[in-house]
Image (cartoon, rainbow, N blue to C red; front, side, top):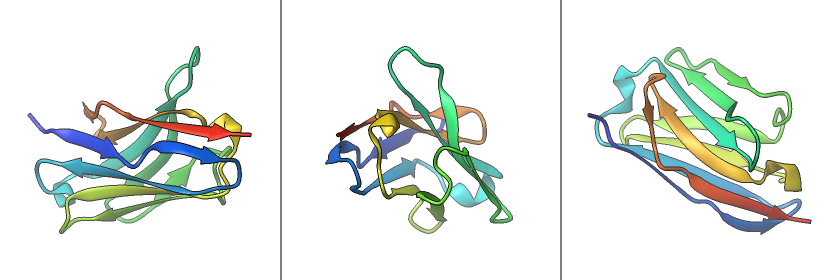
Length: 112
């Protein structure tokens, strides 16, 4: 069983930035798919950003140009840099590893 833990969420004003971090219990280099998802109250969970082993990144249209996904294999961490945050970005953000493993999530709240 792989343990996944997110951190870095918080309360920020619109236009601000946050950096989310996801730590896994084993090395990330073996996984060919890493992603961040989010779920807002009353809405379905949606993919925000995905990173493949080859380095290809994919983003939801709503965050393109504002969010950046990256990984540090040595540190066993996945990151999500979020800039120019909007109130619509308010959600619980989840790290997903290999399309199988989830963390408990970290709350991001953006005030207007």
